[in-house]
Image (cartoon, rainbow, N blue to C red; front, top):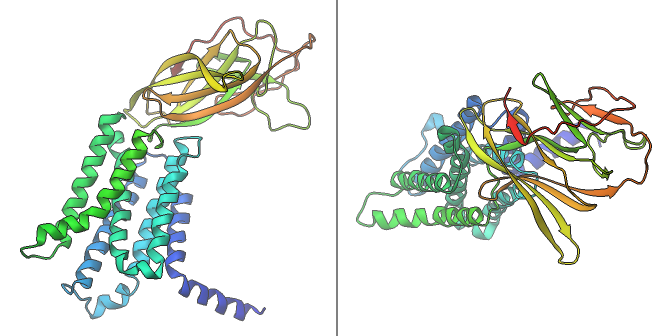
Length: 389
């Protein structure tokens, strides 16, 4: 195929699927430029996307109801109003996927992506095009709530049930105000506002249900780095994380999983937790072992740790486990209401070797420090704490 023919086919594809192309374009743009969740430049972009989506929805509805017609100068640009709306939604979606994904190591953030993609796909199905505008309002409600779910905690420095309820009610208030701009004047104006409000309310109730089921990641918190180690040392504010020298065929290993246990060994869970500036919250580090006879995970320890935000590299801390047996283990960093931020599952195995062990070390950023052949494990237990220095 010649280059000219290739360009022709590409242009035809983009024209036929222009909505999809702009949606993906917005997604890729924010994926490449997204910084930390409390970066005001990124928050300004997201607010701009929401403002653009609001204006486009209002004028689309005014055009649909005959209350507005694009002028001569704006008509050329208005031809692409649907593409612009999808670009704004794509930008918002990319931000939400990146930020919610960072806030949990589980597959839970995929629920938001699946919900957004499902609404977008349904909106493009020909036989539901008549209801497309109301579906876009539902998607708009989801975008507003997804933004306020972490924006309000950033402002007040807290997360929890009452904070999410505040985000939910604030989202409903914003959408109700937008319906006032959409509904035409008349004696049935309140009924028209309720009709427009209904799709967004349905979406808000779905998200609220997901929150009650603990399926929404605890934004704006996130674990930047975590691992299981044989020893953790802190000297002059610097952490050294010690793990067995990996075999030559596994040079990527940078922690002690699987954990090879000898008498007197301790297990250390180390993590760096990011929280926005001025943010305070209590985390729980939960140690669990799998009970084969019962077929369930049994909690052995729950260690509370206070986290105060503001450090770009995150709070650094460790939780220590001294008495443990071989088997399947799991460590979860979660909020005090049980919302998992990060989970590590690993196997503990008895080490029958009695010879000297070779060790590797990394710093708190997960970068290699040195790889001594021999290393004496510390007899001093690093306390269960998170620190900011």
